[in-house]
Image (tube, rainbow, N blue to C red):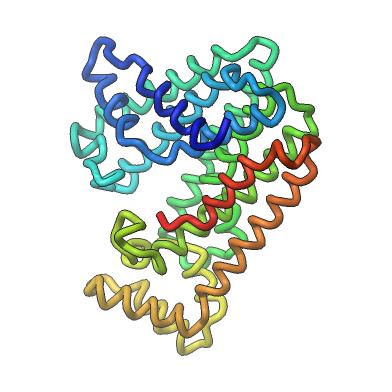
Amino acid sequence: MTAKGIQQLVENEIDKLNWKLTPYSLYEPIEYVLSLGGKRIRPVFTLLGCQLFDNTIEKALNPALAIEVFHNFTLLHDDIMDKAEMRRNQPTVHVKWDENRAILSGDAMLIKAYQLLAQCDTTALKSVLDVFSQTSVEVCEGQQYDMEFESRNDVSIDEYINMIRLKTAVLLAGSLKIGAICGGASAEDADLLYRFGIGIGIAFQLKDDYLDVYGDTAKFGKKIGGDICCNKKTFLLLTALKKADPETKAELLRQINANDFDKEEKIKAVSAIYEKLDIRTHTENAMKAYYEDAVQSLKKVSVPDEQKAELSVFAENLLYREN
């Protein structure tokens, strides 16, 4: 099945999930957040990972749905922590209802994810649960690092890469590995797919950082410069701080530490520093390096290259996307 066909399958199956349960006030926010759409990257990865080894991808369907429910649970709680007002151009759950409802509904989503996961074939269940549980813990670790970095000006690039590996990449990698396990892959092939997912996941997050500065607002779906305005520790900012001469670094730190500023002026000033230091090229090179490293792992997976085509193209599109 093509990646596009799998995306549609995932969307159809998400629509079939029954959230008309009591108390509906608990389940309504879950139904709402899942209806907001998205690329469904993680469940598509799960099913593509399974399809590499077994065309009966239905055996990975419930784990794929579990991963999507879990991913949206993390977004729901992240939005509370970030005090975000919009998600996919719609009000976030804690804004539409309240924080208590968002926390409790999020907790229910995590439990429902495990219930979906438990419906996979019993021969794969232990391995799938182990990967999912370890991945879930690591996502929390990544979120904690991300929050701690907000108040630090000494974050290294290596620390940042480790943070996005945990917060973003491990869930993509875990999705692929779970799909491979459901498809009957060997331990070696499942691990190679996991490493492929880590490289793709890091490149994916670097592309997000890149788009916040160099993206087209109409295609990106949100205003450019959001990370700059909130002093988010991104690959671009950390690379600029590392490369800048003392005078340029002082100006960049002045922009970061300013309590009172005009958003447009700040975006313009920081972007000018990035341009001066050629941060665009450095970021593009880093994205390509992690992507190429990922591709090398995929090449080693012991199935014919033609069977890897859909997964390879889907992953490549993540790197060259504009939103």
